View 1 (tube, rainbow, N blue to C red):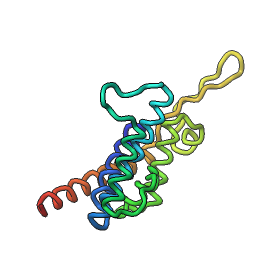
View 2 (tube, one colour):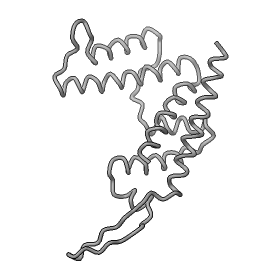
View 3 (tube, rainbow, N blue to C red):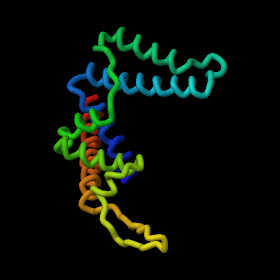
View 4 (cartoon, one colour):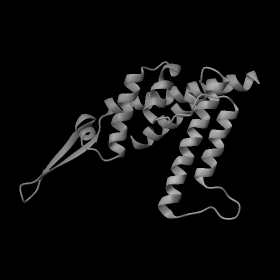
Length: 172
């Protein structure tokens, strides 16, 4: 599920980028993602004390360039794009119900982050082993009823992304 979660996020991000309502919106989305990337880079540089060598720029400097470019293009202010926001925004373009895509992503994210609730909600018990000390161990596997929709959502988003990409390439 963790790998499918990552694939879903990537396909949704590509679709969200390419499916903006117009060129300015697509530019704003792309620059928002770059701005967030450079924000994360800057945080890493602060955490590690790393400074780019030579005439390389820091994440903060790159971020300032990105914001300056957005201003010069006359774009609305850049906003931090959240993963769930991107998923919910991309789902309709792929003919999917946003709330269902969001729910599947949440369960997969829960697994990825080691949360307890997805094991109860999206797993099936396969075995219960009694320990000598009276403690029982449960063996759980991912419930196919939760895994299958995630696979379907990945496939639909990838297919729609490919269609959009081909159409944009033809338009050039």
